[in-house]
Amino acid sequence: MSSATMLSPATHAAPAPLLIAALDIGGTKIAGGLVDHDGRILHQVQLPTPARESADHVLRAVHAVLDLLAAHPLWERAAALGIGSAGPVDIAAGTVSPVNIPAWRAFPLTERAAAHPAVGTRAVVLGGDAVAMTAAEHWRGAARPYTNALCIVVSTGVGAGLVLDGSVRPGPTGNAGHLGHITVDLDGDPCPCGSRGCLEGLASGTAIARRALRDGWRPTGHDTTATAVAAAARTGDPVALHSFDRAARALAAGIAATATLVEIQAAVIGGGVAKAGSVFLDPLRHHLATYATLPFTSGIALLPAALGTDAGLVGAAALALNTLPATG
Image: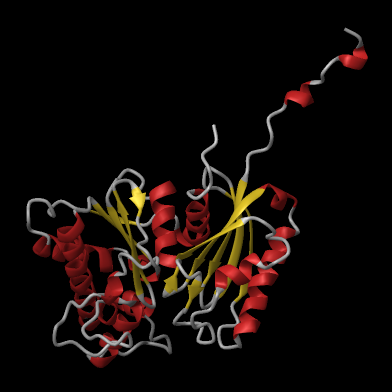
C-alpha cells in the first residue's frame, strides 16, 4: 500500500466526548459552566443577578453568561443546555417565577434561553434549583449510594427534591418534594404562599434569625443573619441554641413525614444553614429519631451535602444529560 493510501492514526481517533452546558440562576448570581459526563465542571463563569431590575434586564444577564460560555473553545462540544433556576418553576410550561426575582413571573425562560444564537438547536432542559441539587447529589454526591433519598436545601428558604427507585422525580411541573411548604404547625403563622405553619417559616435561615431576635438574642455587631446566630450558638448562647433547635425540630418532622409517605433511605442536607454544622445537624438527628419511629422510617441516614456551591451547575447538567439518547 502506498503512503498516499495509508490511514493515519488520527483518522481512527474517537470523537471528543460531548459536554453539557449548564446555568444556575439565583437571586444573587447567575453561574454558567461546561460539565463533562463524569460531573466535572471544566469551565465556569459567573455574573451578578440584577434581581431588582426589569425582566428583560435579568434576561440580558442570562444571555451575557451564555455569551461567555459560548466564547470558550469547549462550547462546540456541548450537546444540550441544562438550567437550574430558583422557583417556583413549571417545567411543563418552561416558565419560572422566582420569589427573589420579582420581575420574572411565569417568565418563559426555556424559550428565551433557547433563542440565544449560540444555543442553536441544542435541547434546553429546565429544573428547579432544589431538584438540580438533588440530581447533583445523587449523581456525584452524598445521595449517590441510595435509590431513595430526600435532598434538602436549607437557606433563605427551604427547598427539596426526591430520588425514588434510583431516579430523580421532579413531578409534572418540577416541584415534587417541595418540602418547605408542607404544614408542620396547624396554628402557625400565615405563609406568603397562602398557607400557614409552613416548614419554611420555621426552619429556614430567615426564620432562625427572626426567632432568635424575637426571643431576645442580640448580635455583637450588625450581622443578624442565621450565620451570626450559629456563631453565637457555638459559644453556648441559649437563645441561639434554642432557635436552631426549633428549626431542626420542624425539619425533622418534615423529613419523617416524607419518609412515611415514600420510604426514603437517606436525607441529604445542603444550603447555607447546613454550614452551621453540629449546631444544626446534632439536634436534627435527635429530633428525627423522635419523629421517624415506624420500622420503615427509623434509621434514615442523615448526611451533609457533598458538592457545595457546585451542585447547581452539576445538577443542571445532570437533568439535561438524562434527556439525551444513550450512547454506546
